[in-house]
Length: 212
Image (cartoon, rainbow, N blue to C red; front, top):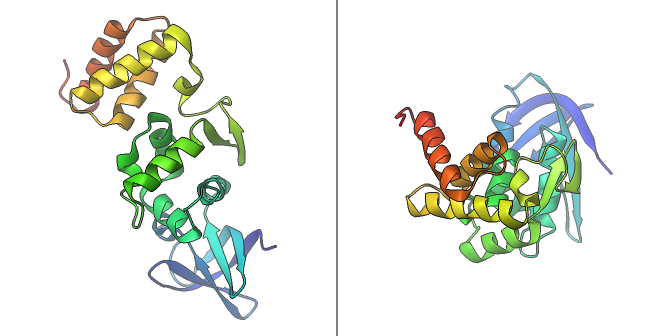
């Protein structure tokens, strides 16, 4: 199987790049965010790839990093998510944001992808909750997970979830609220929900340049 591709950029299409390899032009479909980082025609390029074989076609999908590829594989393991939908999701949600959206159960970020409706977004979040990509391999709740609150249970998890709910009720997005709650809990372990809410609001105010 084709695991990596190196060559010279020939041209770009709407959702693909043509790479010249040994005198042959190879069409590689990729997320729009990846295409924007590859360079210009004539530049050398290297991509990690996934060859999808179907009865009537061979399609090569390319990514800038192994992390993107692993998330593509995770996404396409969900029923109803084909390769095109996987690319669409990664085009609007880079891996770190996608992982945060899944941990926060924030379907609004995922439904920004073309062809992904609310029901499919919920299925993705349900099936991939608790999964992460670490160092190019998939795992569960490992060190380095950008969503450490996934591993919290009992009072700790309850305080974090109460904080997220309170912030969401104040109009903040769930992903933004989740990140703030996790950050303040990490800095103040053992704090109760009311303390976490106050600290999270202060942090979010600073992030938006308003202060409190």
